[in-house]
Length: 508
Image 1: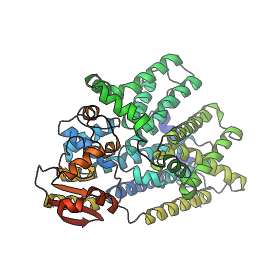
Image 2: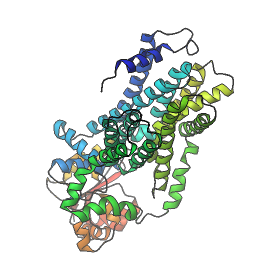
Image 3: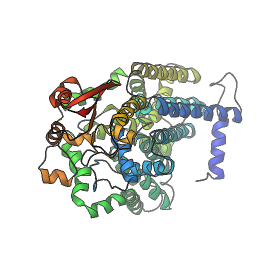
Image 4: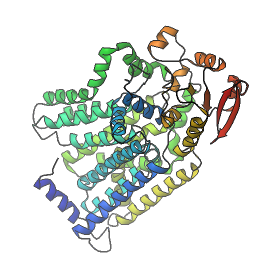
């Protein structure tokens, strides 16, 4: 979508409004453009580099394995258990079909999408910040708040999080344009983007509801009810493949997307409440999260009490506040929940935190010195991220699992039954035995007929197969107690320790 002359003029006027309060001399439009977009480019490059070196999540194994199975002709729900909406998986499958099924390509795409969210967030602050002298430093600070968020760095570069970040930020930006326009293309586009995020991860579901309520509350041109209907229609469109699969097999689709999420996620989960409490208070131990959150609270107070920015601009910042609050509340109710889930709210916290940074500087008598408050915030964010990444320097990476996969390939005949993590199946390009595509499903104990219809193998059935010697090779990162419980050392005569995991082969 090309920007019109008015938008272009506004962008140039924003650049030219950067004052000498931010620098020792007023930069030209060209200099400001180079600094602003150069900074965003460097942050994006950092995310991409991390995605290709250190980024790893064990859970991404079943996402990538699902994409690999789709390219082999199988369908989620109908042919294997996959308790996730499938859009991002089909997205990865399409790219992998074209360029090969390496983990590097999905990582690159996720980092690229996260970078897109970063750019949309920073540009919003730059073009909308109510104090012209602060637009540049506030925009740069908001970019660092997103790029230095630990969950964003560690998980925005893997799985569906990257594409969800981009889609919900893009839906936010498009939604800003639909209030004063009669054209129904804007609410349709906002709905499609928000719906695509939810069709990639159910964690994004609150965005659709917030956009709908915001449209009903603030719409100024055209019939709000027709616009709302179009928004909902757009949000449903990305779920059409799911509806098609539902028509093919209603039971498995309903189980994966509804029953599993409501009833089975916590199945056999020990101290889920204590775990959730630890997650919801984890921000206390994270200086980037604590600082961004506290600044966002200050920003909301400034918006309500002190901001002399007009109803239109106030409404736009309110939308960011609504999205931040709704996403946080929704993710807090997930049981169990995880720290990484909350990265979806970070762009909106960063927008509000830029207001909070200005408010505190104003209260401390530093209103005319925007460069130093922003520099201090950026420095603290970078130090907090660096410490967390240093503490996690010994965590598993794809290279560790590649060594396990290489060992499995060395000792296992092609086509022989293998029990391993989804990551190993993906790396070795070996299809898992039926019912073993999603390891968490082994926790579920169901009647055999129902389990078979849902493509689930229970842990008791899996134990029986192991003890019966059904697998030529077992690769596991379980602890010694689990290995002893399964009797793997008695069943197999050969084993090797690889990357702190064990590979067993050669049945006795």
